[in-house]
Structures are given as structure tokens and as C-alpha cells.
Length: 219
Image 1 (cartoon, rainbow, N blue to C red):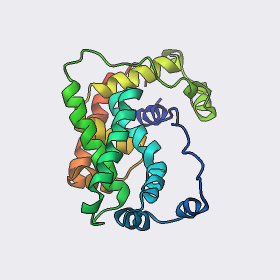
Image 2: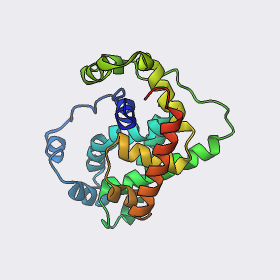
Image 3: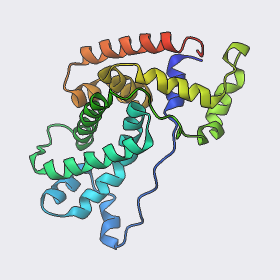
Image 4: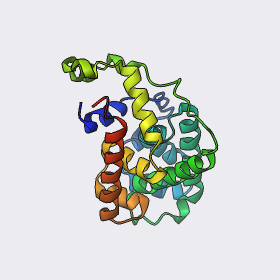
């Protein structure tokens, strides 16, 4: 299996619970508003508009944070903390980037800081890894052509991927998660991390080289 296929495999995880059905007709209409309009409504005091933004992006943020922490509880807490920070800081948002890039930057920065504080831990929790991945039809097809050397259980492969990701530095882990798992472009990652696209490419190359080495028995 190629490294990029393994990374995409790691990206198929349990979705969070779906946002509750809108309670009033007006909220249903907000679902069709562009991000910019929802931001303006929120800045003008309409908290319902921000609820729509949360529902629109919470799962994508969760997926990224989870792959950086390998812990569902930590990921949930960090995503919630991210949206609280975004809500409190929204009046400072000037639209120089998209709302998603802006809130993504908050999530990545807070997660990197969290990981740095957590470094005293000796291990990471992998007990709550997504088991439903084993029933994904695309994954079943992907794994149907494995060689004996690659005949490893899906749970073990998922664990090894997460273990390998945790061995990368915080910035390299963030870049490979955003690009290879979340499918973000170099330009969007550069905006989220406030660096050049060249720096993104360099970090991505290094991260892939490290993962290739760490997962050599499974690729």
C-alpha cells in the first residue's frame, strides 16, 4: 500500500453526532448563507448564525485535531475550545482569509500548544480508535489485493499510522494531516500556518520521508 493511501485510510474515522435539526424556519434559511454573511450576522449579535458555522466545520476540524492528538476526548475538547475562542475573537476577523482558514489556524495552533504541554506523557491513548473503518467498502476494496507481507489487521494498521504520526514534530504532523488526510492545498495550509508554500512543501516532504521509514513494514 502506498503511503498516501495509508494516510487517506487513517482519515476515515467516526463522524461526530449530526447537528440538531433547526428549531425555527429562520435557522433553516441560514444554512444557505455564505460564510461571509454568517460572520457579519454574528458580528452584529446573531449567535444563531455562528451555530451554523460551527455545524458546517466542526467535523472537519475534529478530524484534523484527532489525527494530531490520537485521542477522541482531547480532540472534542480542543474543537470546542477553538470555537469558543473564535466566537470571542470574531470582531477582530477582517476577512483577509476565509472564515474556515481563520478558524482552522486557531485549531492547529491550540492543538500544537496542547501537544507541547502534553509531551511529559509517555504514551498516547489508542483504545478509542474508529472500528467502523473496517466496514468501509472503499477500504475493503483497497485491502483486497494485499500481499502476505502486508496482511495486517486494519486495526493494527490504523494504530501504527497513529503511532507514526505521533513521532513527528507538531508542525510536521499538522502539515501531513492537513494535506494528505484532509486534502487541503499548499496555499491553504500556508495561510493556516502563516508560512510560505515552499515551507509547506519542505515540511510535507520531510514528514512523508519519516512516515515512509516508520511504516516501511506495512507499505
